[in-house]
Amino acid sequence: MDLSTNYLGFKLRTPLVPSASPFSENLDNIKLMEEAGASAVVFHSLFEEQIINESENFHHHITFGTESFSEATSFFPEPQDFHIGIEKYLKNLTKAKKMVSIPIIASLNCNDLGTWTEFAKEIQNTGVDALELNIYNIPTNFDLSSQDIEDNYLNIIKQVRSEITIPFAVKLSPYFNNMAYMAKKISEAGANGLVLFNRFYQPDIDIEDLKMKPSLSLSTSAENKLSLTWIGILYDNITADLAATSGIHNKEDVIKLIMAGANVTMMCSALLKNGINYLKVVEKELKEWLEEHEYHSLKQMHGSMSKKKSHNGKAFEREQYIHTIQNFH
Image 1: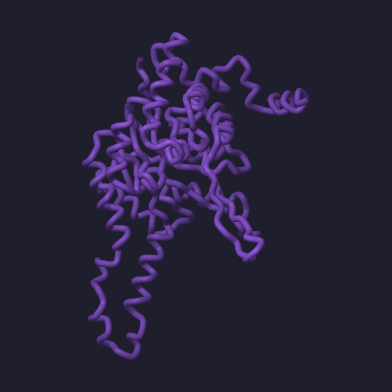
Image 2: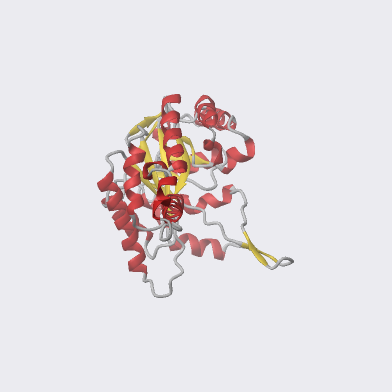
């Protein structure tokens, strides 16, 4: 049974790719993922704030009090030493790449334009195969237009493309005025892939302590319907590859997303819940389903239920909405 697929220019053995998670902070887990059947691994994220904060903290500490004691700067480390956390991230990327034969995809979580985009080149220099650019932004500026937000995305992508030559994907939010238009423009701006979709984590309120608190829950299969919808719409309409994420938990989820047009399916919550070896279970069950339904390869069903190839492409649009409402009892 041929489960191979293509993503970001690489031929992968299966569509099963662990997404960025705490698992990949431990280098030993990278090897375990490969042994469990992962066809590629997205490394844990480096955040824009980490890069900015390290730079600002260094500048503060190296200059604090020097107006009184001009010789004080001699007690501080040299400028090249301030990237402690960042250097560790880069070194671990280099080690991870050398440990396994599968592609390693670095993850850079960002919000806005800045000198951090130059860091994409440093990531490339580690030897990683590709980069996933996670643009995580919740606009709260009442004077910022949707056009400004979209332009910011495209400017980030264009700047990163100008810095690196390795392929990169963009992990997106679904909250655009016209997702189809933005997907097309992002692909044209130089992104080799789209990862659909980002999960936004909303805060909660502690009603006893009267404090805001973080809130985190693992995804469920119900959450992949949004990815399925847009992947089905975008398939064969843009040049970028399509990765499904959020709500990929079992063979059924994988099959549905591949049929919609996904090149790969990325798993996080399912592995956090069931362990890394759960990849073996999903692959085994995926093979059994394909054999039972007389498929010889994954590519046979790739995009078969997309809007372009489905016998009822309108199901991806308003027709499905009306049908669902009218038939609910």
